[in-house]
Image 1 (cartoon, rainbow, N blue to C red):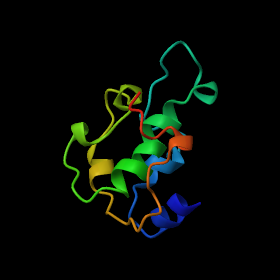
Image 2 (tube, rainbow, N blue to C red):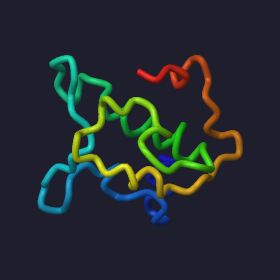
Image 3 (cartoon, rainbow, N blue to C red):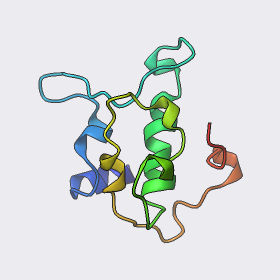
Length: 106
C-alpha cells in the first residue's frame, strides 16, 4: 500500500507495480527461475518488491545493478534506472529484519 501511495506521487515508476500497460502488454520485470510459474514463484517479490523496500527506498546512494540484491530474478531487459531513480525515503521504516529474509541476497 505504501508503494502504491509513493507511485501515485510519481516517485516510483508505474511499471514496477502495475505489471501491464493499458493494452495489457506485460512489462518485462522478472523471469521465473527453477521452472516455476509467476504466481507460484518469488521472482516478483524478491527481484522487485524487496529491492524497492530494502535497496531503493532504504539507500541514499544507488547507482548500478551492484547496489541491489536478488538480481537473478530480473528479466534481461529490466531497466535498473527504474530502481536507482527511486528517492531515499527511509526513517527506519525499511530496516532489514531477520524474519523477512532481507539480509540474504538470493
